[in-house]
Amino acid sequence: MTRTGQSHILAIGGGSFRQTRRHGFIEASPLLRYGLDLTGQDRPKLGLLATAMGDDADWVLKMYGAFSRWDVEVSHLTVFPMPNLEDPRAWMLDQDMIYVSGGSVANLMALWRLHGYDEMLEEAWQSGVVLSGQSAGALCWHVGGNTDSFGPDLHVWAEGMGLLPYSCGVHYNSEPQRREMLQASVAGGELPGGYAADEGVGLHYVGTEFIQAVTVDPRGYAYRLEHDGDGGVKELRIEPRLLTS
Image (tube, rainbow, N blue to C red; front, side, top):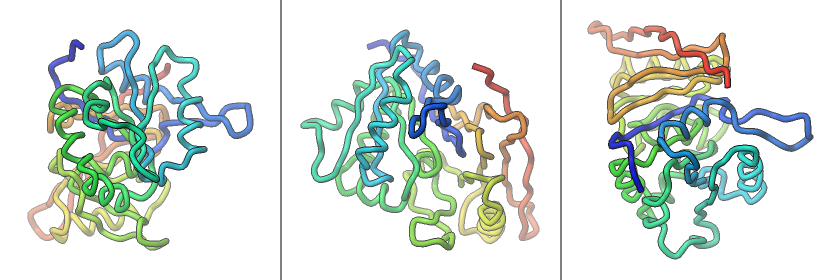
């Protein structure tokens, strides 16, 4: 398999999928088309991980259906009640892109570490497999952010894989408390400076370098958070590239 020679991560604040006219059905948004195009493959292999959703069978089935109109070879990996594949590492390395669903990022990381999936995913990333995901599936690649994994109240969380040495904010314009907590966490040193994404916005990294933001919502933005040197934080708004198809 020919790789692009670069390591990509597409961390999505929200908006990976959108509802269709058929009740209960979803379709992949242009954010995921953008991610798949990063693979450089005409018919990319897409691996799905719904660990953060407890490998919910209905959600996995919906994700399969969401790509039914695209020329993509879809498969998935579960951990409940046991791994569904004999060799998860070989499966990860064989994918062109891996997509991680939203849900509980704390549970996701605990299970990945238990099964060694974190190390396998890092190896896949280094080999050129595009890593992507929304919400929990965006936070996991970073040092941390904030999460409702422990209950309805948000908690600062710094147990991510750290492939990207930044904090991450998701659902940034739809859940105001996330913005407030991330700013306070960066200002107070609980989390490093980093990036955040509104609904419909994806953060694209090559290696560990932030390259650009992309969006399916013309009202959506990305943000860079930095220490201001005086115990506070600076938030710089980033204009994303609008994806139309």
